[in-house]
Length: 493
Ligand code: ADP
Ligand code: ZN
Ligand code: MG
Image (cartoon, rainbow, N blue to C red; front, side):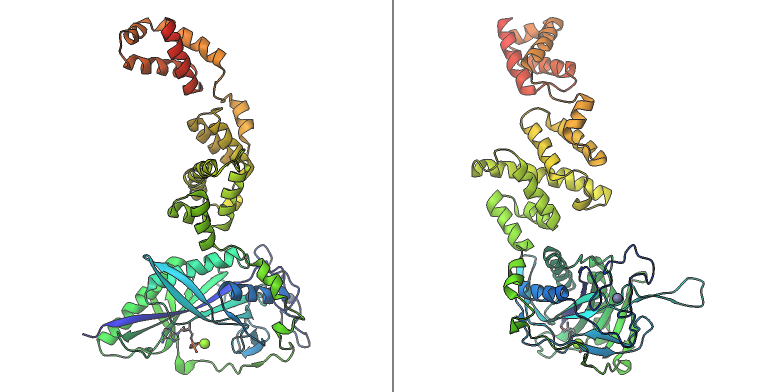
């Protein structure tokens, strides 16, 4: 039997989060807008209007190109891709796939400890189309052009992935890069990160690529893996029966769990590409329009670098560093909380100890609560200052670790700070030796039996007496203080 190898290449669209659209000044953010509210003659495709390219969108494509080690093309040209569809009023899309702004590049992915380079073919910039809405019982369709003309990045990979899992990891890494660069929300569920997967099989050892099938409609990370797995199985079965794979576009149907044929190569469109006559070609190196020094200065520390730094600088475990850097905002929250703690720069050892504490807290308390509430750190009511204040109180024995967790739960719910909650509930730990002494004296008086047991050498009785004092203080006495004073007073008995 012939053994086959899976070959996958991805075409990814990411919506850029610029303020305005790609070629007009309409608001690019339409989540709360009424249908067709964010439109103008340019994005409605009225005759006689002229597109003006959004400089930020172009700079961001170059930023991504630099982050992925791609080559900036000498010349960059918009072009028209002609086709008819009701969500495209101009009957052409302005894109740039033939003369793209960025050529080549790579993303390093890691699967089961193996590092692999996934090469990028090119990155280009284009505008999105509108949306068609098909009312359930209606005999008509509606069109909403708020999305028409919003800036889209397209990232095309080389066919370098060999397993569905690799495709998912690539997409997750790319999402992280887009978010760290702050150029896209890159949320698959919300549709601002989308992916088409090209899949083919070839006999192991064969150089030439097999016939590919393109899958559209993939809109979650889970789906990427499932849809590709299904398609690999389907092609494997065909080849096993000596049938041919037909080059076609298939759509992933999540409810059926299969890919379904949409259109084959014969029906493919001829888009009659030609250069966009209304926008002059851009020569990025002319120094007139694009300042690459400025763009390079925007390049932030990306997730992998940050994660490695957290391991080196704070001595965190690989797993904890990965969790904390999985979200840029979360990584900031961690470092800001840490910086807010007093004495933090005194010496490395203290910093590492405190970092471990803050990391544990964020992972086991903050993240657990965020996940339960289904929100992200940017919607967390507890800001880094309030968290630092709470952790500092626990550190100094003003409250016990257990009480700190209870206070945090309330901070998380109400947005109040720890001071307000401690005052309102009288929760502060009693470290005042005078108050503790009074309680201990009472406990000794009331428990003469255990006191003489202790005197007779029964160590267990000491623990019992501690328990009595803690109960009297309703858990608020500082255990260390109780321990010391109890020993002291028992010695004098
Ligand atoms: P098309 O002209 O059909 O758009 P391209 O050559 O531009 O095809 O490639 C589009 C995407 O498909 C790229 O991500 C590429 O890596 C991938 N691809 C191309 N050929 C194959 C193949 N035989 N198997 C899997 N992926 C492929
Ligand atoms: Zn507009
Ligand atoms: Mg192509």
